[in-house]
Each structure stands twice: as C-alpha cells, then as structure tokens.
Image 1: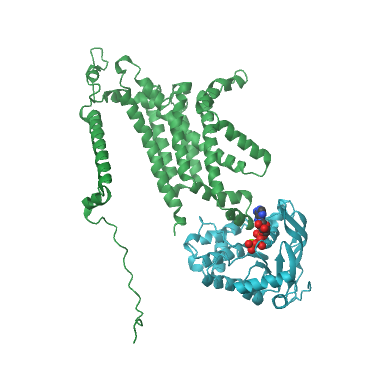
Image 2: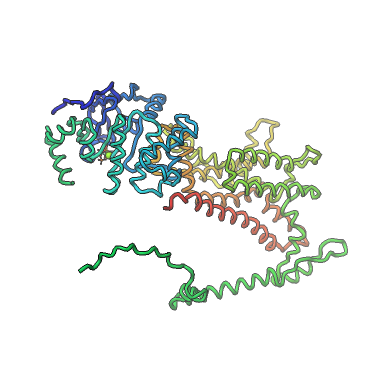
Length: 257
Length: 378
Ligand SMILES: Nc1ncnc2c1ncn2[C@@H]1O[C@H](COP(=O)(O)OP(=O)(O)OP(=O)(O)O)[C@@H](O)[C@H]1O
Ligand SMILES: [Mg+2]
C-alpha cells in the first residue's frame, strides 16, 4: 500500500487530524483505526463502496456523529464533550449534504443569513449583503426571495453551498453533494465546487465523480469496510491502484459510467 | 422531403376553464344524479334534510313566541309558552334571562363590566389572529388587556365597586378559563414535548411521568382534586382562589394533551433539518426556535386546533365544582318555576355561542394552515 502522498502544492499546517479513530454502531465497527491528516488548503476526495463509512467519517469531523476512540483535532481544537469547542468547530466547518437540507419554511436569503446573524452575530444588513454576494457567486441571486421548494435540485444544492459559505468557514465538508441530482444538474454543482476549490478552501468531499477528483483533488482517499485502504494523488490512485479492493471498486464504478 | 422541419413553438394555451359546463343544473346532473344509486341517495338525503329543516324552522321561527306579557305581580307570565310547547320555541326565556346566562350572578347594575371584558377578549383574539401583529409588542398588548380585564372584573380601584370572584359568572368565566388555559398550556406543552426528546434522562422521565399521569385521569377528577384535595395541603390560613385552582387543573390537563400533539410534529421533521442546523453551529434554542418549532407546529395545526376546540368546551366541566361558567349559568337561569321546562331554548342558545367560538377557531386555522404552508407548494 502506498502511503506516500506527494502534495501538488505547498500545504500549510494541519487543518484536520484524525488519529486512531474508531467508531461502532452497536456491535458494528464502522470506523476502524482511521489515521488521516489534512493540511490547510488541501482538497481531499473520499471514495469507496456504499456502507464503507465515508459519511460517518466526515460527519465525525463536525461531530454530527461521535467517535468512541482516538482523537479528532480540527483547526487546532480537539473534539470532545465540551460544548465550547464544539461551537467553535462548527463555526469553522461548513457542511453540504446529499439531500440539501435547506430550511423549507425560510426563503433562500433567510436560509443564508440565519446562521451569520445568530451564530456570528453579524448585523442583518451585512449578512444580507454577504448572502447576496455568495448567491451571485453560485449564480442564483435572482432566486433570493423564493422558497427552497420552488427551486430545482441543482439550484437547491448551490444554495446549500452558499449557505455554508456565508458562515465563512475555514473547512468545507461535502457528503455526496451530487448523487441526488439529475445528470444535467450535476455539472452546475460541480462547477460551483471547482470554483470554490480555486479559492484555496480546505475541502473534504465524498463523491464518486472521478472527473472532479482528477480536476481538483490534491489527494484521493479510498475507504472500504471502515478503513482507509489507499490514499494518493488522483493520477496515482486511479492509474496505479495497489490493492485488490481498490481495483475491484474502480472496475465497478468504471462499468457503471 | 422535409416533414418536421418547422420548429415554431406551440402557442401557450390558457388552462381549460373550470366553470361548470352546462350551468348549475348541469352540475347537479353530473354530480348528484349520475346513475340510479347516486340519484336515490341524493333524493333520500334531500328528503330528510328538507323534512327536518322545515320542522326546525317551523319550531324555531314560525311558531316561536318571542315575548310574553307580565302577570299582575309584574312577573313574566309563561302560560302562553307552555300551551305552545312542542309546537314552537319560547325565545322569551332568552329575552328575559340572557343577561343572567351571559354574566351569571355578577351584580346586575355592573353588567357593563363583564360585557366590556367579553368584547376585550374577542378583540384580543382578533388582533392576535392577524399575522401582521405577530410582533414582540403583542405580548405587551396581552399583558395590558389582561390587566384591564382583571381590573374590570374585580374592581375595587378607580371607583369601581369590588366584586368578589365568587360572584363572577357566565361567558367571562368561560373565556378566562379558555384563554389563560391555552396561553399557559401551549408553552408548557412545547417545553414538555421538547423535554420528552431530551438526552437528559431526568428531564425526559419527568416529562413522560407528567404526560402519562395527567392523561390517565379524567379532567373531572383533576378538577375535584384541585377544588377539594389541594386546599388540604396548603398551610393553615392560606387560601387560593377556587377559580385559580380550577384554572391550574385545566392548564395541566390541556398541557399534557397538547404536548403529545407537539411531539408528533417534532417527530415528523426529517433528521436532516436538525443536522443542517447543527452543522451551521446554531445553539439548541436557536435551532429549536428558528428551525424545528416553526416547521413542527405548522405540521400539526389541524390536531392542535382540534385539541384547542375540545378543550374550549371542556372548560364547561368546572360546573361540577360550582364555578359559574357559561353552561352553569344557562342551567341555573331556568331554575325559577315559571321558566322551568324551557331548557331546549336555553341550551340551543348556549350551544350557538360555543359553536361560534369553535367554528371561528376552525375557520381561522384552515386559513392559517394554507397560508403558512404555502412554501411547501411549488
Ligand atoms: N445511524 C446509524 N445507525 C446504525 N448504523 C449506521 C448508522 N448510520 C450508518 N450506519 C452503518 O454504518 C455503515 C457506514 O455507513 P456510512 O453512511 O458512513 O456509509 P457510506 O460510506 O457513506 O455509504 P454511502 O455511499 O451509501 O453513503 C453502514 O454499514 C451503515 O449501515
Ligand atoms: Mg454516505
């Protein structure tokens, strides 16, 4: 197994560290001794078969799930039971979900301004200006006063990205952001994410979009059955898989496409 | 040979008209008389409706007696009404007794005070129902109005004579019990519903215990406990107003039922909403206040209003501990010998008053539901 990573660019200090992380659901061991270090500004794509623990791992990073063993250190703060550190981490880590999870009773603009106003204590005017700026960046400013239910799936996902960005996070987590979308909408969301990657944001992205991985990822992490099996640059990982598990996985997704 | 080269977009057509084709008669034929079974059912129902409606109109209006003369002692002479019994209604009883029904044993010459109180309550409901007044200031309006209501009912200040609570009665009592009941039971219910989903076992157990205990007991026995047993636990010389005790029992009772309704709404929300709020860093109360409750409560407007309506009428059970609400006052109003036997008229009238309040709630909730759930329609 090649653990060697050859970062494409000069990386900063670690933004996220997972040290010997283990997690169980009841008797099921879903994360097995995960060791992963992600540098500031690094873009990591996580892939692997269904049920391999990808979602669980990134959800542990902002503690939507709790790990039971090991350490997770985000932006220099260790995740523990104390609420202060949890608040601090959630403020710095944005998340985009597979099913968008916009707030259906709030307008697009309100979706984007709620957290900046109440968590960041930003004045309303300023928060609205910021939200409009990000909505413009994801190219849907004209939808600001509509409700989520009135938008297409691709538009909703772009709003979800804008909503997370409005908190000015240092790290963005994406959990299969395009897998609930129709093919013609996948591109618009991926374009948005490429644009975000160009700003130097630290990103962890669970996705099976290999084109996206090749285009933006500094590193691809392959998980299977709760373990990190391989971790390498996209070209190496896709072009020169070391393990049978990865070879099998790659042959399956290539057949699927 | 070109077959389909012409790409003129097809013109946008207006939607088909939904106005009844063939006029009202056509509608009747299409909806009520289509097929022999449908026609038979329609005719049978029409016959029953017409028959009973006619005999009711006959009783209530055509053969009704609206006024009775006084006898030589200056008391109303109801002989006329008695002869007319079973043929026509005797609305004279309402004309004679309406002030007693509405205000009970409140001093007669001070009846303007409870009358204003009823108007204030209704005004308060109307203002609170309008969405454009849903602001923080509304709380102040409530506090101010309820203070004025208290002053009017009790008196003893501003030159108003003092009226002890034992003499209050009728509609104001019903409105007081229902308004304070809901105003306190609803927030209580929300807290209990949230508590039942709490991660802290002590809070959760307490909430479950409360709901199960209260739900397992009839309201009547709660009222009895409040009026008879509760004073036994109080220190000597301390006496809590009977109405207040009944009010507390009603709040606890309604709170338990509403809590379960609210909990149903909380459970119906997808987990993703909680997660998205958490991921944005919202605190527990921010998440609950901005994301969870607004959606959960909208989902349960129909069962909430159902509970409200049931509970509005349940306030009439206070009659068993001797509180003079609208229904008790109505019952008492026909106790004099000359008016005995006219219960139907009195109960129809009181029923109508209850109906107006409940129907207004029902109508309002339907409108509110449509308006608040507009965002869910594409
Ligand atoms: N809340 C839960 N309770 C119990 N088991 C769970 C729970 N969530 C996930 N699991 C299990 O944990 C394992 C890892 O799940 P996870 O969602 O992390 O997989 P994944 O790699 O994201 O898969 P997918 O590609 O299908 O999203 C799976 O076997 C799943 O069934
Ligand atoms: Mg997943």
